[in-house]
Image (cartoon, rainbow, N blue to C red; front, side, top):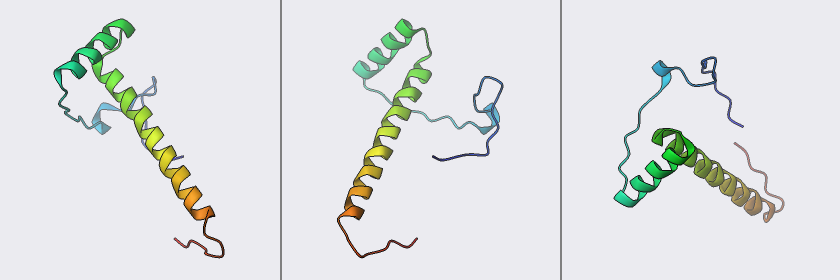
Length: 82
């Protein structure tokens, strides 16, 4: 797991001075879906988008890790050196 030395607020959020805004462009259907979910869950659209991004990122990292582990196990007698 990646550990960072960034300090957070009492609520566990990253301090505003350490945040970087990322503009994204959505198709109309995606925007409407995001807006609808934000209204239902009583959250901001950016919160919903960030949560989706983090879930997708975790899945991508996990699949990459599984793929690299399975390819390493197929090679015998070879030692990886970093």
